Length: 180
View 1 (cartoon, one colour):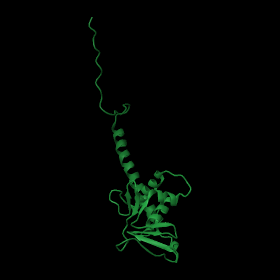
View 2 (cartoon, rainbow, N blue to C red; view 1 turned 180 degrees about the vertical axis):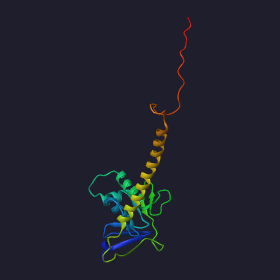
View 3 (cartoon, rainbow, N blue to C red; view 1 turned 45 degrees about the vertical axis):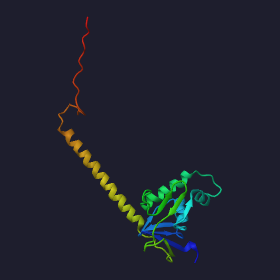
View 4 (cartoon, rainbow, N blue to C red; view 1 turned 90 degrees about the horizontal axis):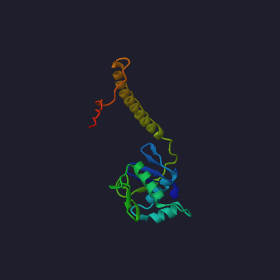
């Protein structure tokens, strides 16, 4: 069995190298290709400090990229994994030196590799994400409707012909008399 047919399990996540995806439960975790490649490279070397130069050379061969491209991939991975740079659970930063994959395996210990299932199902990850997005959208629409409903009521109570006042009304300016 080749290393392409392996799945790395850490925490609630499964990194399916053969399928090129990161899965949490039944949901796919969306990642860009380079961010996935960074996670794959680091997870293949658990506990080892991988220098930024090594990562750049391995993932962007014969291409000049700035270290900010790598930092962007690490930031995307942390956001996707719910990781914190100050208290890392999965990816640790050794400032000025590189990165280390520190995730414990699902059952404790280091991250483990297990054979991949024969055919992974399509899952319902998209449905879960779509449902969460629909709930957020409904909440936002309700909030906007609630805030504009109060404005309409206030406008309805104003006498006709008088524009609504916003803010505090200023007293008229006094003119100073000139001394003659």
